Length: 200
Ligand code: MN3
Image (cartoon, rainbow, N blue to C red; front, side, top):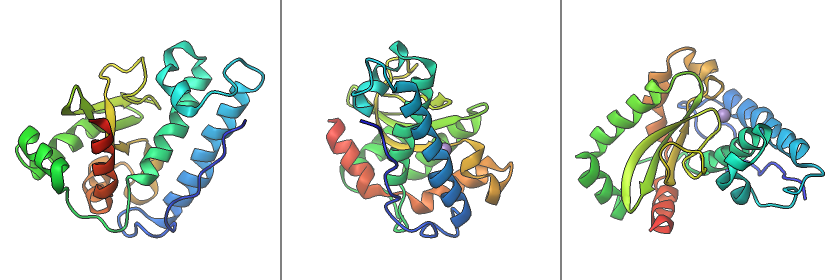
């Protein structure tokens, strides 16, 4: 049962001008597709062939590096597309309240989140997670994520941002901080709230 690329839940240009159409096309159609192709290749004929992506990712430390990296790549990007939306805004409801009480304010949260994203050396991800019922910011290298058994800081992802250069280089070149500033205009807070509700 091979994995297939889920369609992007909006048009390639939907996140303009914050994330450009060409980046979205290459990121979804080429990069995400490559993780899926390589995951399928790594799993073919093995005992893990019929596992769900969640089973593969939560047990990543027991898998071959190709399964950890490409399985993580598939899970992370599927999660990432869903957490973006042209109808950005700011967090409200119980997630908004939890962000304010944990970090002081939405602005302070963004500052800390972006600092964690800038501090991630090389390629990886920055996350807002729920850990033992509390919100926390964490980051992971490569295509790891906080639901993996190998994660340094484990938790349930509420929000995740890709800080690999392929997610911003065409528009922002080496300026990762500018990409991280822009991304807050296109966060799907409704989806983040759903993730927060499920994590409880
Ligand atoms: Mn990516």
